[in-house]
Image 1 (cartoon, rainbow over the protein chains, first blue to last red):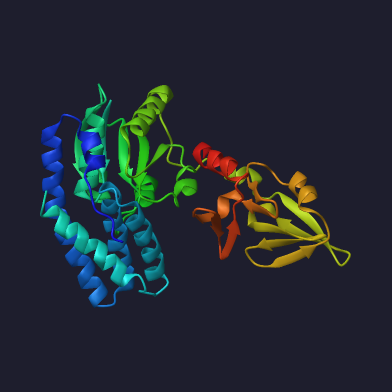
Image 2: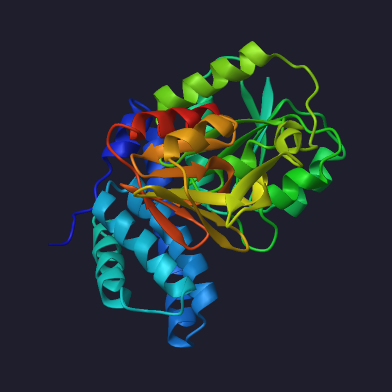
Length: 106
Length: 236
């Protein structure tokens, strides 16, 4: 089952600081689609080293959004890519889609 | 104290900036999405602390540290623990924060920096790893004494009445026990992580839940030895 992203970590960090919360949401709304596109470009072209770099970058967002299992999935997928394998591609894509849907709601 | 933040991800920079905002007397004076721009800045301005993402495309955090002649205190921020050992070979690296960073952990980091004070740090590697270089261990195989460099040993595995000593180049089977060889090994370099395994601590590539990756060897960590391994990681 796919984990639901959440802003628990960000809320803890923000406390009463609404400005930070809003700023963070704005940043992730900007940054995530760009990184997802970059990831898709690389994986489509079978550039596995570059794909692994993007997975590394994206997995940090899984952590921030409280998706620990998805983070582990990304860790494994990154290693796979560096070994020339793409077995985790579909599962990783599911996580990306879940985040994409979620950030449209925040 | 003043500081700068270097991270290629805007979300990560925003988080570190927020963490800094909770610390009185810690001012974030600049943030950078790449290390090259930071080097230019550091040539013009003296700062106390750098929060540095170690994993950046093109020019990594370690590359960056090596370019600094008179570095301030550096705190590494990363999603991985893989680089921890290499990182602590640099005196200027005072802490290693694994993302997502909690305020509690960040506060500890700041306390640590404050306790160190503003003494100048050095970008050169510490001499500790060199101190054991050149130290050798002689093993008896078929009446021949073969010299092994301690620093080249990766893993030692118990196999009944024998042990297998795996080095970077070869593997040797020696008639002795793990307990006996452990007494001959420097504690700073070697650690028993399982009833049947001693590892060269500096050769760790990766640590997962219950195993350590050393070169191509996946070595199990026993539950009883895991706390010591984690303590050593923190100390380094």
